[in-house]
Image 1 (cartoon, rainbow, N blue to C red):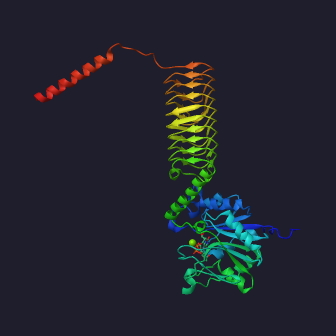
Image 2: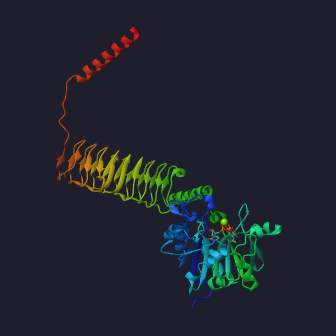
Image 3: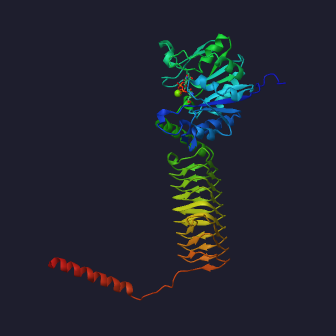
Length: 462
Ligand code: UD1
Ligand code: MG
């Protein structure tokens, strides 16, 4: 039994994500909700929030040709809405998928990615408040209410929602607007949706009509207000860019609040899944693509580009380093300018400081990879690995033709093309012997100068 005065336990909650609209204003072959913010499709931002709130099951309502969206939301279910007959019709498409579910249904939009878990918590709490409203609508007060539905309230709560196109002039003056997000008891919702008729300006089945229908059955309805910036819906590339800016600003602040130093925060780009530890220094113009983890105490100098990479404590990377998927930089390892690393592990204290490509490789602890080293990992058909042992020293401009192994403490001479394994503590060299000609350079210059003055004399004579 719940002790008196303690909050009521949360009601089991399922979610329906409305995502059937193509979003013609995006002018894209990609469905709108697949456009990314922070490298993650916007529908997955919505899903992440639902997961944070432990909402389950989740059903996404998508268009007939949206297999990509189905994949992006899997393993959650999707149902197809063949004809877009309105938000009420869209929600009804999820009814069969939720058959037998008892509890609340939260309706969210796939193109409104910033609604916070905390705001959803407020809505859930409102359902168990004193009046026990059957429906809770998330409202907000935008600077420009424009085409948003207006929330018409009375002393007893929310009375109805009127769409801007159907509103009377005095209703249009109402500043409290419908975000579109709604929480309702499942049985009540399915019951009321069955009674929604398309007799309105757009000829659509409006989800919003369930509020008026609930009131006509004396069921209470309530509004929870949320901040405008969470309700941002994305309809165009311009709005997508604005959303990206909002997202990046939030991520930069979060990184700094968690103890990272960003010397030029406005120039650093994060992905939704970027993980940054404490006492990390990030210089200007650093781009974190998807799948990057940075442990505590890493220094990232300016102009780096990372994706699918792991940087361990004490690593120093950049400026101008590129880490591609599968790059794992060990503790205190160094990666310098114009170095590309892909699917390779640098063990503790290893150094690749200048102008190198290290792909499909394992570099042992404290090994030093000289300037201009290339792992030739691809023969046009297969990718092969290069192994560089601990403490090895790879001379400048070495080409390591994989599969090949340099043993522990092994060395390669400058310019070596290494096709055969180098044994432990061995040296591989294959450059031809150097020929030295005393005084040649001086003679060469004299010869060239003489040739030049002769040709000038000839020109002036002609
Ligand atoms: C809707 C609300 C309005 C609210 C506004 C907030 C209704 C009738 N109106 O209006 O009160 O202020 O959102 O942005 O609900 N969708 C489908 N299938 C459909 C229709 C829509 O999946 O048949 C999806 C869309 O892809 C979109 C969402 O539902 O994600 C909202 O649809 P939209 O057409 O943008 O509704 P609005 O007219 O903006
Ligand atoms: Mg809309």
